[in-house]
Image (tube, rainbow, N blue to C red):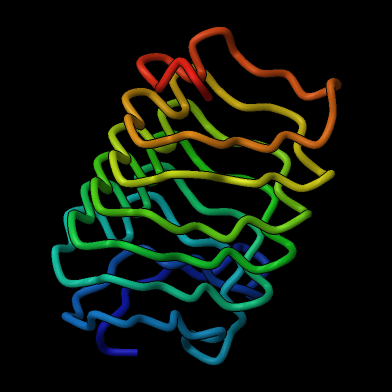
Length: 168
């Protein structure tokens, strides 16, 4: 577990990533750290990492914390597993090369500024579990041309798609 720092839950049954020190370009986050299942990608875990290009998050993760991948300038592709219910504030903010994200049906909440400045992101399809898209969630996603939201019951903040293409 040398490349990762992590927290153990209070009940000592799971863990949350806290820090990543590696230089992998293709990263598959482990499903267990310290013998315990990883249930959350913690706040700031991968922030400012300029090496990571693709990420696979393991099954069992429920939440991606705020700024977890903030300013990961080389990140191009990420797959969120079924079971993830939330993407934290500014989670992928400044990931200017991110052009592919696979979102699970279980995703309920997209935080404020979650994809701020993801200039390469062209489309995103949300599943039936989606409930809210936060303010400025896709601010300045200048290539974003297609967003599929499954229901009219989803709460979309008025500024969610600020400075995105008009033809969206």
